[in-house]
Length: 633
Ligand code: NAP
Image 1 (spheres, rainbow, N blue to C red):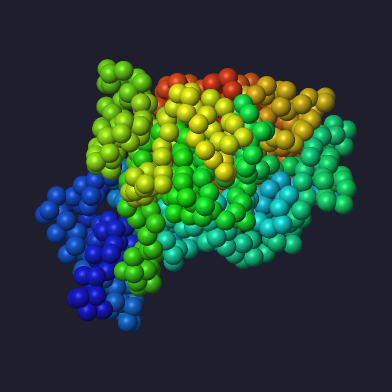
Image 2 (cartoon, helix red, strand yellow; image 1 turned 120 degrees about the vertical axis):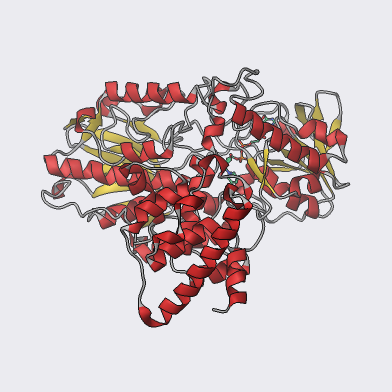
């Protein structure tokens, strides 16, 4: 490696991740020295908040490390020393972490392999062979469902995965609208044990994501456990037999199978929400939801009305604007935009070279992103008594700073169009609703001559278009609903009947809760992944939660096997305590304080979706079930 190559690699790198990777690869802790300790409060600043002298030293160390690595690779040893990992994790996070935290981050890092692999569950086997058609049924073959099947297989437990679709992928199979891509860095939005450094883009598109989930399914050898084209319509718990009866629609009719346990991996964002707008039934043209995209429509001469300006709409509207004659965008509440210049960019060539040449760089880079994008920023959404301004503006001084920065971004983007600027600046605190990534495309789209942003409320739909409350009629040939999903209606439309005939949806009464986000009293051996209060808000990866949840399910089954029990039912007091904890902490977060409408809230206004605590807390509580919180049957 000559000095020019070294310079190029350093320029392409995230320098702190590179130093950690080099220290790890060479076994030399001095490449991540204490005078370059990272300050978490400056995590979002350019160059990690290092001053010029520190930056120069960091570059010199990286250059030295790269040169040494090249030589050692040529033959004289060096190589990873795992004992270094905990101290490098502390260094990269700029925090003196406790053992649990280090372990959790080491699992995320997975530099020495997939640390989440469960120990096989050995005798006494669970469940007794004669009790069920299938030991476990997993509903859904999306991101969480295939992971659950993989972890169960590793633990030596057979399962069947049931999916209504003809392929794996769930939301990444169903959402095919133009522009659909992941709005979390792909190096974080991937399984810790199946990292892929060579993502084509920082935020890959839907087909790339779908291929990744297909590949994982193949590599894990679980495809033969999946039954495609079967829809679960109901689950009922048989008290006497201690198993679930599962009614399926198969395309040829109905069928019933049984399972000792059920893992619901049906997602939160897959039941489309189409608002009940007056007159919609009489609309003369085509109308459809973003998750059921009509690829057969020729857009050229069409006037299109789009309802909604959430994450989905902001991805497909720029494409519609290029394809259609006219696009009218109906906005009820503007989103806060987070600038992300690389949103649509391919991975920089130098970065790919780094992944190739520096063993482990991709893992440390992922860990840095993981830390930065979640633990590094979520604090800015929590209420702080030091804030004495109005809560409808901000919830803390840091939250207010974020608001000012993001307002400046909007002013910069829309400064030449005061008419648009007046409509796009949100009037609620940052984080009260889902933020949306932007690389300038939203302003460019709204400024096009064939695009109009309408912020007057919709009054009704008429055969020829959309009438707004100011009396204007906006002609439309097609209406596209970017109106989101019925996120609070967990496990709908399945009918779920538990002990004593209790109905799950009646129990929840429109306000879903689950102990650890997974278990509900009265519904033994029913385990929810991406269940109530497990959604994260500021761009952490939901895959982290699926990994914690899948681990917990396996540990619950292990508890059953060890205790010789067939079923476990969460105790109501543990469930209530847990819900109170969620409510208490959600009430301190921007999304719980602000009255603005969002899919984070159930119909009662309670936050039924979001996780309000640090990520480590979810990891800790899903390590193993506390037997005291369950009745074993
Ligand atoms: P959403 O965030 O719930 O946005 C729905 C939009 O429709 C909002 O602008 C909403 O306005 C509007 N709306 C709903 N009902 C309306 C009505 N009756 N009249 C007028 N406007 C109405 O849904 P989404 O954009 O599909 O995104 C849902 C979630 O999916 C995201 O938050 C994100 O977590 C996930 N997602 C992820 C990605 C990704 O990573 N690639 C992409 C897309 C979506 P209000 O704001 O006023 O309610």
